[in-house]
Amino acid sequence: MAEKESSANLESLVARIAEALERLAPAPAKGPGLDAADAFTWNADAGVLDPVPDVARVDISLLKGVDHVRDILLDNTRRFARGLSANNALLWGARGMGKSSLVKAAHAAVNLEKPKSLILIEIHREDIESLPRLMALLRNQPRRCLIFSDDLSFDHDDTSYKSLKAVLDGGIEGRPKNVLFYATSNRRHLMPRDMMENERSTAINPSEAVEEKVSLSDRFGLWLGFHNCSQADYLGMVEAYAAHYGLNADMEKLHAEAIEWAATRGARSGRVAWQFMQDFAGRMGKALD
Image (cartoon, rainbow, N blue to C red; front, side):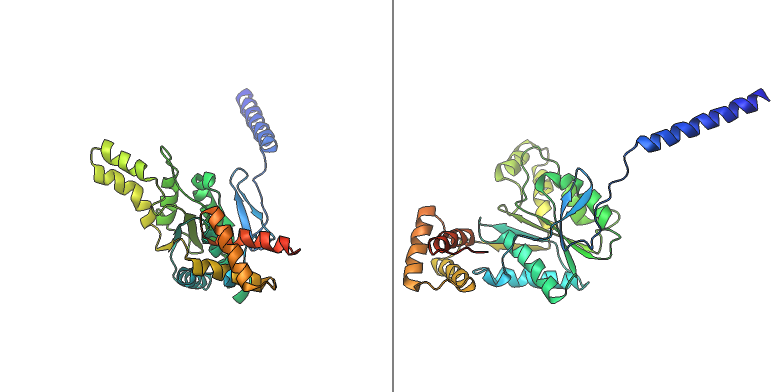
């Protein structure tokens, strides 16, 4: 009899401890549903998606000098949004030529054609290791999700690239059918050259060591290169901005000032064209919204 009472008391004690621990434990993080917005940022610390009601982007028609890669990425994004086969994409190359702008513009263009068809989710470079958690969160969601990482690259002793490789390959479960990954980078292989050369010089089998690093880029089905633009393309960007925002400027004056602006910056790019137009519009007493 005493043993039964002792056993019952022990079970009661264990139950009370379990209840107390449940009360003390924080509730699982619950973010807003994926119907809350068409764009989100991934909050890795909290494990939730934060809605972005107003994405900073430009209309796809304003992206000049990148017509070929624009059409390829837009077609790939359309197919994915329609449930057809599509590739992960790496947009690499010259700074300021509209890589990230194109990703955001393609997302907007596809949703304009078919509202609510595609979600854009930005993951920051430092949170790449949390990608598997994000994939698990999205796997059973009905909406199609475009994961976007801007200015992606990896430095010495950085092993987080392995998390990205696992996601691009899909692992044992396979990449979720409703998820696609787009990244922008100034580096074609996402790794600094000296990092790969160091691997070659210190490895027992140099070719295999380098292959481990270089093969990350191979996981992207699309490699879209962005190169420095010509003066004609640069002036075309300036003219497009002026027309879009209704700036009735003398073209000869506009061109001359745009060329001088680029010379002071030592570069011609979409970013430089936009910065010039901000200055030009301001001097005309207008704001570019």
